[in-house]
Length: 190
Length: 190
Image 1 (tube, each protein chain N blue to C red):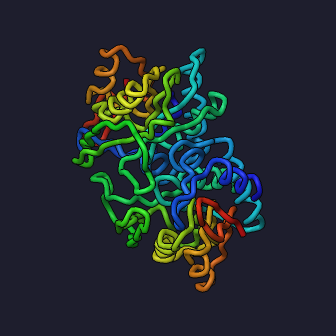
Image 2: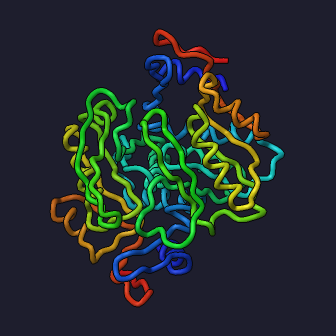
Image 3: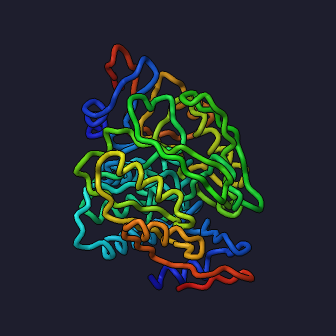
C-alpha cells in the first residue's frame, strides 16, 4: 500500500535495526481518517472471504481492527485483554505472548462467549514482527473451535520472521507494508 | 441517550453495587456501528466547541474517542499509555491514576510533542467512575499548557463522584448515560 509506505517514510522513525516507531499516526497519536483507509485496504485484501468476527489484542490494534470490522459489514470486533480485570469472571481462552519490544510475557485472554465454533475470524494487528501476538490470537481462535480466515497486519517486519512462521503453518497473511530492512535510520520496503 | 441506556439494560451486567459490565458491546466485544453513534452523540453534546485534539487513555476508550475525533473533522486522537514501552523515548507528561476496579496505580503518559499549548482538547473515555482517569488526563493537558474543552464519558457512575469532582473544578462533563444506582442486579439511571 503505497500511501502507507510513504507515510512511514515521512512520519516514521527508524531505531537501530529492529524498531520502527509510528507514534505520529498509529501507535500514540492516531490519524483516524488514515486508519479508515487501512480498514478499506484490509477489506480489499480479504475480499470474497466470509468473516463473522474480527479479533485483535489491546491496545494499538483496536482502531484498525474496528475499521476492518466495519468494512466487513460491521461484524463484531473482539479484542483480547492483556491483563485480567477483576470484572472478567467466567471462563476464558488464554495464550502466552512474549513482547520482544517490552521484554515481557502477557497472558492474553478472550472470554469464551465471544468466540464460538463456526466463527470465521479475521485477525488484525498493527505490527507483525516475530509473530508472537498473532500466534497467540490464532491459538485463542482454535481453542474456540472457530476458523482463522487470515491474519492482517498494518506493518510487517519481514526480517523478524513472524509472517514466515504463520505461512508455514498454513495461514494466509496480508501485510499492508512489508519492511525488509532497517539500517542507518533508513527503512527499506519489499 | 436512550439507545445507550436500553443497550446497557439489555446487554449489560450489574455486579454488586459498584460495577456494570458492558463487555458485550464496548469493553471486550465491540459493536462498532453503535460506537459510531456514540461518537455522533459526543459531537452533538459539544457542538459549537472548537476542538483541535481528542485525548483518551488505552485501551477501551480508544475506539469511542476515535469516533468522536472523526465527528470533529478528523482532528488527531492521542491516547495516553499506561506502560512506558521501550520505544517511548524523549520527554513526556505523566500522571498517576488509580484503578479502583483493578486495584492498581498506573502512571499514564503522553509524549510532549503530541500535546501543545494552544490545543483545545476534548477528553473522552468509556467510563467515568471516581474520576481518577479523567483527572489524570486533565493534568496531562494542563502540563502541556493546553485547554480542556470538556470531558465526555460513555457511562457515568454518578454515585462514585467523579463527575462532581470534575465539575467542582470548573470542567464541563457530558456523560451519555448516567447511572444513579446499582442494586440487586438492577441498574437505575438518572
